[in-house]
Length: 337
Image (tube, rainbow, N blue to C red; front, top):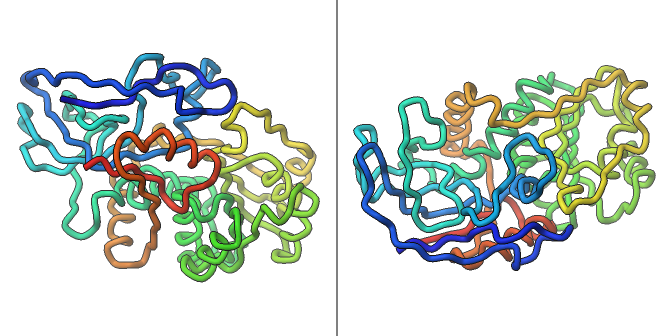
């Protein structure tokens, strides 16, 4: 028997638990070429909110009465596929459910075998998974940081931002994080090794946040890794140096349906800044290299990570809502077994 969460109805601005519906189904016998995966961990990510809408997006929206999408790691418990055997640990797009039945192909990127001999399987959903690879790509392929530059990253204690900052420090950058609350800021500086961190909750608008950033970066900002948007983005744009590079991988400030206009686009022109939005699923060719480097860094203790873990599939809706409200600390996961 499989238990799963279906997408039941579109949110009215704010996501509530009523958007999801528990459903049980009998798992039928798998066919030739298929595998059955018992999911151990489910990844909860902000992008899921963007797909819970009829609005145009970079990927197809979540359809009603279908299993909620999401990355998972788990164990192959049945196999009729030559490349997978029972007991293999895999990362896949298993969704909000206990079991995932699929027919992987040789060129498929949605099921990969992973090595859990040196790092926990859950890390392949965080620092050594999609969030980490997102950080790796935006930093190395878009920002291309140089030693001595000043880089700012929003949502600095999160699954993406925490990796961005650590990788940038390893490249010799001065790194300033932006996070919500004293505890997160202390973690970003004391544990992750950022040079400074601004608690945005202490600065209620772009003007006051921009002023604080100017005190920490009197020579300006050379690069910005954006996860949030809103007035935080306005504040950083106001401090950009000439020819600064900005990588945008998320805009969580607008995931509840609010508009998040840029209040001073002139700052982009003045700085002659390059701003690039990207979606990591468009760049599957770099996944093997990035995944290997990140997993090695975690195994060697060079890359530090933190997880927020809720227990049981039934906890997924509340954990997801909490993620959208910034309640998580590090990568948000659901333990399914």
